[in-house]
Structure formats: C-alpha cells, structure tokens
Image (cartoon, rainbow, N blue to C red; front, side, top):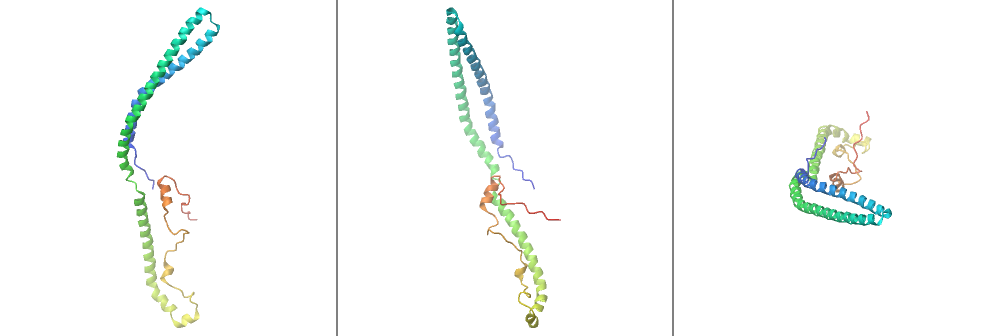
Amino acid sequence: MKVVVDDLFTETKKTLKQYRAKCKDLNKQESELKAELVALQSEHMANLMSQETATISERIYLNFQAKEIVTKAEVISSMLEEVAEKRTALKLQTVNLLQESLGKDNRVKSKYNANEIVDDYLYRMFMELTEIGQQMQSQYRAIAPDILEIYEDPKVAESFTDAQLRFSSDEYRLSYWQANKTVVHREHIRLAGGGHMPSEIRPPAKEVK
C-alpha cells in the first residue's frame, strides 16, 4: 500500500506566494538598476581609455563626463541599497505571517503519529500471532489425550527414551528467534520517521517456487 502524505504546507505556500508577488517589483527594480550600473562601468572604462590619447581640451570634457558617470553610479548604488532595505523590511514583515501559517499547517502534520502507527501494527501483529498460537494449542489439546495414552503406558515408556516420547504443548508454539530482545527499535522508528529506511530492515525473502 502506497502512503500519500497530505500537503503539510498549504497555508504556508499561500504566504510565500504573496511574498514572491511583492518581491516581483523589487526584483525588477534591482535588475534594471544593476544593468544600468554595468553599462556605466563600461562607459567609465571607455572614458578612461579615451583620456590616454585625448588632447587637453578633450580631456577636460572627458573628466567632466567621468565625474557625471561616477555621480550616476553613486545614485544607482544608493537606490540599490534602498531596494535591499525594502526587501529586508518585506522579509521581516513576512516572518510573522509565516509563523502563523506554519502554526495552522502544523495541524496537518500532527495527524501523522509514529506511536499510533507502531501500536496499531504491533496490535495487529500480536493478534495474528495469538490467533495462530490458539489454533495450534487447540489442535494439540484435541489430539494429545490419544497420543499421551500411548506414550504414557509404562510398557511403552520402558521401550523408548524420553526424547522419543516427548509430546508437550511447548512444542506447538510459534518458533521465533532474534538476536535482540525487542522487535521494534526506537532508533529504527526515528530513522523511518525522517524518511530513511533502516539498513537492518530488509524485505522478506521471496519464496522459491
């Protein structure tokens, strides 16, 4: 059965969408200002190169032009700082909205509880084990009197060893062996809860047909 988790961030996504919409104008301003700044830098470099071969009168004009370029660059840098400040203010304003949205969305996450899942499967597992065990014991009790009548006869007991005549209810319990005493480890649950299958947990071997 494939598990599909409900969207954990429905309200949060709405808040982020509003934030991105407000950022759109700031992004446009920032992009245009940076493009202007790059163009001014190229213009300034060309101006400096021109001054190297210019006459005195041309250099006077080029110096005036260079100062104008620097002034424009300073204005643009200042405007970029303003955009950055507006972006920061928007982020600060959005934090409270995000906290509120995440709080609402947290109700969805709280529907998924590892303890409830583990308890449910453990209960069903032990119900199945108990049912099998009860049926095994019931079948044992139904046939035991006839077998024990034969096995417990003194003459039979003299002719066979105790091992050969062993027939008890303990032999008709489900066999189980595991190196560790616990079936479910907390660390395994923690890993699975974080989306990682524990390396020790492997799918059951397929039956050879």
